[in-house]
Image 1 (tube, rainbow, N blue to C red):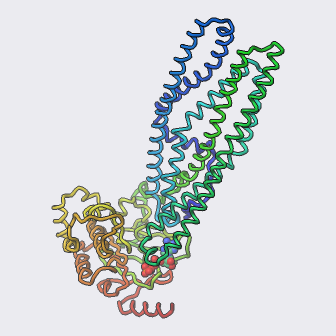
Image 2 (tube, helix red, strand yellow; image 1 turned 180 degrees about the horizontal axis):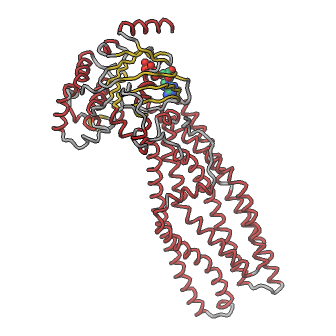
Length: 585
Ligand SMILES: Nc1ncnc2c1ncn2[C@@H]1O[C@H](COP(=O)(O)OP(=O)(O)OP(=O)(O)O)[C@@H](O)[C@H]1O
């Protein structure tokens, strides 16, 4: 299945807004309050110019200074309320935006947790980080800082338009005409602005991926003295990002001058037309001053909208990138499949039935594979490098689903198991064991719900019973040995030991060891073999190894090469096949 996020899929504005507002469902109370405060704020903004015009015509023109003083006091109170509502609005919406960002990031991260390995193979980690950090923040910025301003501006404009038309229809209509032209311009330019912002975010993701890759591989870069190469790659990505950011900046700023120009034209129309009306005696100076302020009240928020509109387009472009992750379909989990419906195909623990597999962006690796593995037996997978051993093991652990055919576990399609059921049955020690920041104890109990709260003493008893305690000798501080991110500071062999203890402690029905002893000295390897013998007799073991002595005790050996898996029979035969395979290649 294609899990690449590198597509140009776009969501319609209405659909995107609908989805985004779902993240605000629980904020109804705050939104309602913010809306009320915003209405009050807009109401005051709308009323004050009219009151000023009234004061000029009724108090100043008639020399009523006492009335003017009372009136000024009233205006001051209104301005103070206005300032209070401004503050409240920012506070309320800031909280709403931050909580939305929190939920959105949780949702995206939660989705990432459900997606299969193929998704992570097809997408760069740095780009994913950029989507979770930067793009969600772009959406938040719009909602926390701009949404209410947006609605506020529209209300203020609508109110100002009504006042303008009520004071004088003709003059009002003439002053609103440039506003209509602005709407046409917005309609035409929005798609282009969104596209520019999407391109900028894509390049930010690319830059993040570039940084992540070179930081992760810094040792190799230093060893091969390839700092210049990575420097160049970074410079290129940085330059691309810079160009795209400039493009997005220019696009975002296109609205402000156009809006400014049209609002000045509107003012000019009002002055020329208004003064001619005064000259004709059909308009007063007070009304003209009110009119000019209303024109400002109409066009100022429109200028503000210019900036907000660019932010809205940025949020929309960011949403497209986030929605791509949220809409990804995780492979079906068998949670809802009733046990009764499962087909019992054989009594074996594991069976491959007509399995073929192809990596999403690669060639076909396995062709029509059929084999079965019985409970309690030890199987070895041998074969030349790149033959398909790890791929087979990955299908056993359902890191990937077959492109054709079915993998049965205990007679049930492996897809019909819930993740918890499946991981409880299968233990997998990867070629490159992964450790997490914490202690050795944290790492060996990773994902082991049963023993999560076990005391160190009880854990030691458990390790002694399974023979795993002897492996701890390799660690000076025993269970408390600190583990740094990714296992830095711990040898690869030691990492394999930790991964081994982790998998064995779960007592899985099927234990897969993919080159799990490749980096361990012969004495420790012997100890591991002994621990394997201590596993319950019903445990099935699948061992992938290049060192043939590791698999001498296997009950059956499978030879994996060029997309086929055949039974090798004896160890000698496997060795012969390996040598033949090498000669052919
Ligand atoms: N993520 C991937 N995407 C595309 N192709 C892949 C991927 N992983 C492995 N392959 C290809 O699949 C084929 C089988 O690889 P696999 O890792 O299963 O071999 P292997 O027998 O385990 O090799 P080794 O002994 O070196 O570990 C190889 O040609 C490899 O290039």
